[in-house]
Length: 324
Image (tube, rainbow, N blue to C red; front, side):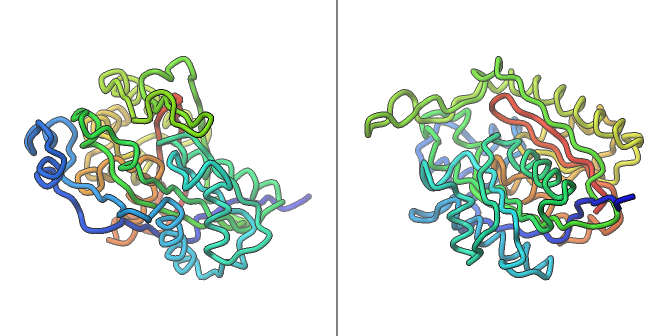
């Protein structure tokens, strides 16, 4: 009988551009009709990072990737799969994954982008796991990289204060012991209107609305229910109870959403990773950024059980349950 192949998390890295921008600094710079108290009370966000001009998603991805590869003890030549989750690619094509591949100096690895907005990293991890478990690939680089500051309407105070830029990356390697224990991915295209950027490039000009638009209340209700159900689906597939999860690492969109999911899963707040106060919502980068911070500061340790979760425009959502 052939030996089973599993995907294990071998390395983690992240990168945030520039200095943190406080709520007060953002309000002053953009002339917003808002306040630090208003933003913190409703979202839990106190600061975020914005990439300077000329720094695109592939640049952030490269920094995070090099740190993840160093953590895993591998070189770019060892990679045979590169997946970048992003909604803010450098260009229409080539993919940001191919641009990243060129920056890293890898030649020949499978490389492509995944567009599932804030669920992108969870989608990409799940896809990479299937590649590895099939036996076709052995070492995968999965990156979430975003420059959402480029698609903000700075007159819309309800959304522009929420998002930031950054990148996070992990290396998955083939192993003979389980790492990723269960995954759950879903989408509901009928909910496309509650979170989107409806513009497009046509005949050399931008048509439609090129800025992010969101129905915050609708997103809140959908996200809490969807992520709770997704987590329970993973637990059932892996044969564990939610209380056996050591750490919940959720998408960092809003502290109220994170707290609501933790309560529904009966997880105390000290077992939920929260970085939204310092990073804002970095879309596909938020989960690996939060994961890297918690690993580096010693909270997350080898052998612990983690639940990673993402939810975003599409509407898309999903979870990954893994043994670190």
